[in-house]
Image (cartoon, rainbow, N blue to C red):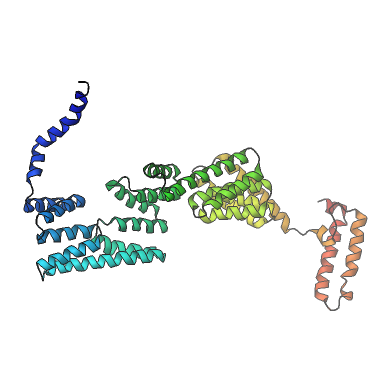
Length: 422
């Protein structure tokens, strides 16, 4: 007796279904004209799968129903099942030869079929703009419900880095089929390349719940996971003062996906900051330049590159970068006063060094150190004056005269204690 409530719960919905007017009507509606009418209504509502099922039923009951062949051919063309559609158009023309309108539809089918094949060929050739042209102007005009074409379009848009359009196109696909793995993968990749990693990860995870062994989804999901893990390691090591380890982590993260520019810009900047702290000016300049190639308005990258140029004694380059950073900094929404002050201080240092570099280095001219004694200065002067005296350099008299004047000027300054002190 205890089993009866369970059985009743199962049987009751079935009994109600069989006794409903809808079920009774469906059981009685085997008339081809009624089925065909309902198929037409569903097609007008763009419910192609439902329409296709009803048309199949019509042709089972009446294999010579010419309009059902034509209608089914149209549905199949919409879904880009071209071979089947071509067969149905041919069957219609057997039953009703000489129909110019059907011959026109058959011609459109062949155009769409050829255009889709051409689109695939252009995709293989990496001519992604041409892919979009074939799909938008021909395939989706004659086959608006062609899933293959929609997915190929999304792939071409992804290759063209039009990530917002990829999100839009795959959104339409997922609205009709929320479990479409290809659309989930493409949409996830679009969010990934926009550096919206949380949303990207959710798309990958949903796809993997549906198919845990999907190779491309697995690669995308774990690739993202590893990238974020390596980035966190780089940031943590930098915070702990483990600068060399941090630099290697940043380089490893950058190597994972060189095309991920919207994210790599921050990795390049992080690496540049670490290299500046390590005193590796040349490498820091290279890293900051990569960041600026991606985002020329990045004030932090300009500032850090200016600091790196100070390390390499490129005073003019440092002044140029730091001036530009200083001009852009007040307009940057996230800059702090402390950061602005840091830029100005660095700029003052660079300008001072540039000014000093333009003065004559009298010590360098005499080939002595800044700690040289008065006797050392006099000895160096006499040696060089003798070496570059114009009378002893007949073959290169002009150069000798210039050098002789420089040597004399250097001795005039350094040989006088007051002038040397100044």
